[in-house]
Image (cartoon, rainbow, N blue to C red; front, side, top):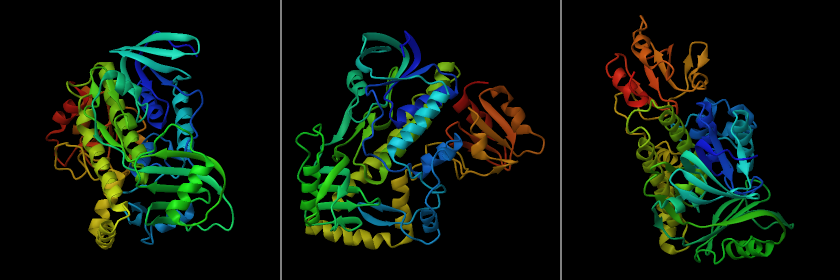
Length: 475
């Protein structure tokens, strides 16, 4: 596919976050292209699931049915009080009331395949085998097999991972803490009899994980970062690491796939510099415990997509695009902090052992357990949206609205106003925002942003006009 001379938005990176963001933009008619350095989708082992809050966003886009149904045993665990997640390998988390949706249990390559098909169905061109080599404001230099092309985009969004080229070329600050560990994750063929025990195990040299599948292994060693992270992981290296950490004579017959990672933990000082923005790992990196990175990235894309589309369409209120950083950066900062805490709880020393024992005791209580569950799923910090409604600043819970569900109604691009007034007063008030907000009769008065977040609600209509103008511009 040949590149055009210009686009509304150039998304750099065809990972799951870049693909979802491009699809969000295309839903609003934005002329968007996705540029990807790799010629084929990556099959590298990364996240194994999509978190509950992002699963709700996928439901709002009609994507849930594209994934396999969850295992019945996992569904059964919801009603038994069995652990549903871990913190630093302490498999003790039981959830919280805000966690209303099951995660999507699918490996990242499968998630990418679903999202690429979805984006292409919407008309998003995904151009592979091209690398961004220069960036000057809206002008992007792209190297490809046929040479180098300069393409103009009104906006450029870096979704190109933790070592983002866009972030580097645009000069974003990226502050945080250095790596102290070497993590290895792999799918392997283990010779029988297999001496590894299922689950997370802390030992005198680190952490070793076996499962949930029969081929997945993970090790964490506290001996500093890898000396050559780009060198491919091989069979001998993962076998040696497994032996060091597990203290067994495990034999790895073959390495199917594997990768290294560290606890390098950093965040962009700003998510926007003029016409250049960052999302996903390009904006924040941290250790992969709990699969929080993918969840953060999808929430970034949902938050940014409609705001960027509104800006391009010309109806965005002043400062709307800047609320992307204001709302999303604190959420990522909380995730980075909890991954640092998890590293501290994994260290193989007597002081950490005492701390883990205390932490285990605390997680036996419902409220601390629910608090940590909220931290791990990103629902602990609502956006700073004023109002008395209990869901203000949070993704709205799904609910019946006439013959449909709220999440089904959100599949229509734009905001959604539920009108419970007997004479349709809320609908009349919102008439000036037609085309940006859809009003329907509902069980309560509620204004929901395009990303599913509650922007206003209440029995009286006080404040509705201000909320409409704050998020959807002047009538």
